[in-house]
Length: 142
Image 1 (cartoon, rainbow, N blue to C red):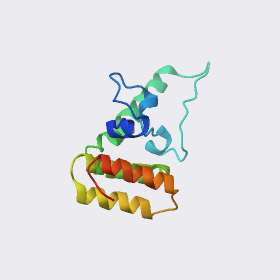
Image 2: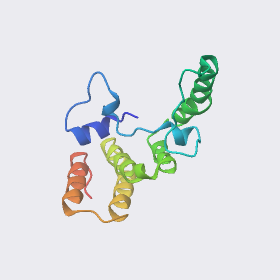
Image 3: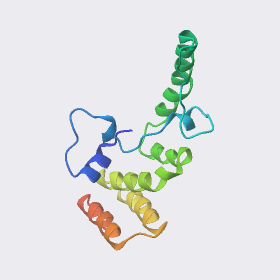
């Protein structure tokens, strides 16, 4: 998922005109989406693979799992749901949502998300200072 504010936050440069996969802040592997029980899903392709069946399986995964998964993310707050899919996203999504809310002027909710993030775990002073600086740039005093 490409999030312009996240890109600017990490890369310290404007959003590129042509977005590449490595520009995306969050990449979700297909395993959890198609409920394979693993973090990833691999299609087995060899000389005995029935191509028509493979195409059908891929089509099924895209239409019944992958598109509905991505279509559920319509708002900034919807991104917080990614924590349910992959807990490693949780903290980074929370801070990005907070900083984006600040940029959009929703300071009350931004402060809530950022403070929750800062209080949820051990953070280095340098990292806390960077988050506070980023919040100030967006008009929010933490």
